[in-house]
Amino acid sequence: MKSLLNFFLIDDSAFDLFIYEKLLIKSGITDSVKTFNSARDALKYLLEQAQDFPDTIILLDLQMPDMNGFEFIDEFDSLPESLKSKIKIFMLSSTIDTRDIDKARESAYILDLLPKPLEIVYLKKKLEMIG
Image 1 (cartoon, helix red, strand yellow):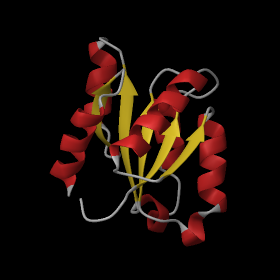
Image 2 (image 1 turned 180 degrees about the horizontal axis):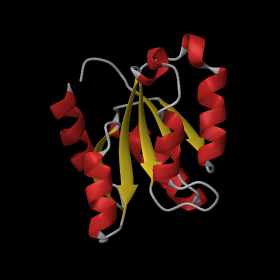
Image 3 (image 1 turned 90 degrees about the vertical axis):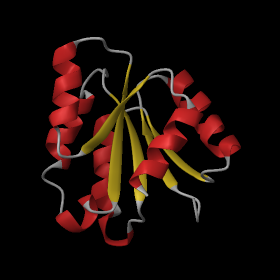
Image 4 (image 1 turned 60 degrees about the horizontal axis):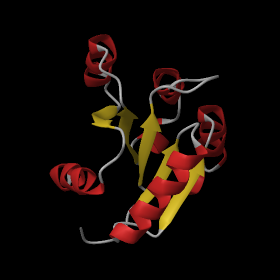
């Protein structure tokens, strides 16, 4: 990877946010991680920053109270194209529900459904595949 990537982590687990942020920074693929424990807060932030938003990878938890990952994707769809084009989304989940897996695969915005707990080596391989 040529340059460091920007990451958003969206997960209701403070523990997961803390661990994933540390892992991403320690791995050397980023020095910029913004964490959100609410999908609604992340959407609000995206809208506020739309003008000067850098290319970003979002790691989005599937199961969250208030607004789950798929509900986030539904709202994400209404964002300006100029913003959406700068964002790549990986959904994180420990689900074995085939309906969730199929729904994630069918989404135009979700690049892949990654298993929890997140393995940085696996993420790096996925990132290399998308360029």
